[in-house]
Length: 86
Image 1: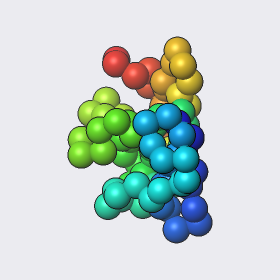
Image 2: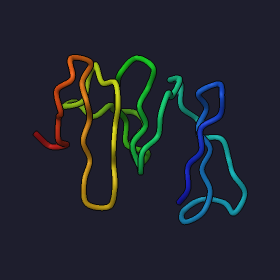
Image 3: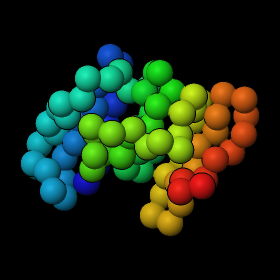
């Protein structure tokens, strides 16, 4: 699966599990950044693309995210690193 973000904070997905053509994901929050499967909203909340109805509770007031195959970490607004699941 591939994800893209437009200038208006809308997310598009295509590839594995999705169409071969990019489709807009229905999500009511404005997204400021994407990393791996994680979406960071302009409100500082983090969502996993597989569950857009519930934010990841450990991640709030977030300024940056990084997600790969074997890691997910966020940087809070007060510059503290928060690993996923802690």
